[in-house]
Image 1: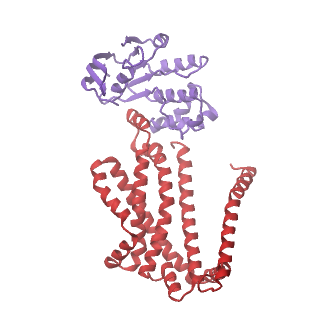
Image 2 (image 1 turned 90 degrees about the horizontal axis):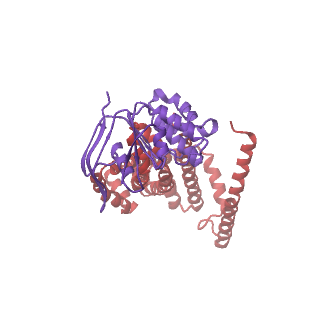
Image 3 (image 1 turned 180 degrees about the vertical axis):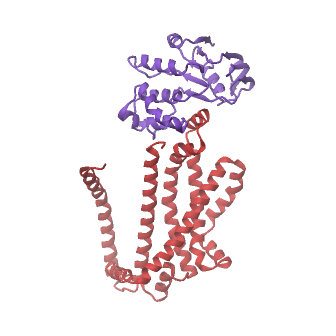
Length: 264
Length: 193
């Protein structure tokens, strides 16, 4: 049971660590305000105040939440699919040298191909509604594959000998040895992958003008020369990306704690 | 009836170093055999061959196929993030999980130490966990590589009693530099090197 004093100590610690971040953000917002004042034209560079007002206007409309949900679901699908396929391909590559050799050029190619090439190809082969998911999937897949494969390879070979000697059942080995070894690498891959998924997914929506998406809103803002809208939607994307990462990292930490709790 | 474990004409080399050449050993079923000798004569290599972790370059090993095995390794090899109890449970049949606490108690680990992550325990405590893990089950063949290394003098007699009790009737290999350890388990001694 968590005591009240432990909670308040944790809160104080969190407040202390957040302080410098808030201060740094305040400095950059002040720089932004000064730059906007120097430019003097809202249609060239919107001020933080104008963006905040626009953001508040957007948030109170029903369409805003539908737009956010549309993009969020599509990018989440792409990300989750990349995690599943990346984990499966990494597990196969760790077991089979042939599979690793076979997939290595494919993974390298996906990693090197510019995101716009994928977007154009997907637009040729599929419709714009699947664009964000497929693009996010393709951007995240190499990160997941490489990260999880490195995690599998980092397993303690001496513990694997213990497993072999005692004939530990495979599922128990996965929980006690494999997953704890892979989790830190998976957390790092998620940190990179979530940001990539949002950047590439929204870029795909902008290029494909995917209906009802955040990308479409950004495209409209560009067409109608509305920098405040561009900034507001960008702030929404950053917030969503950070929220997704917070949720995933929290889940990973919880999994680590559960595994540390032992074989149950 | 479990038969003897026999190593015949074993040759094992690592790179250019020949560790075992034409080596033979019979471990009588249900008895304790102590391998003694200076460092580098191949005691641990013999243990690894018996445990199936290495294969001989030449020669045969019989009597271990299909047998369950357990070991106290020289370097403990515990899951640092798991508790002592979870480390013992890891290698036990689910039906015996409740006994893990009892075995840890027998080697002198109770209460908080039993539930704490093994990485936070002292060297001696970790050794005790490794001993309990190896002996809590009912493996047919047991390898004990310097099992009392790091155990304090006061705690050692109780652990020796526990080991003696748990290996009764099992084919056991004890690797040790101390003849008293071999004598305490009634082992027949094989000198190597």
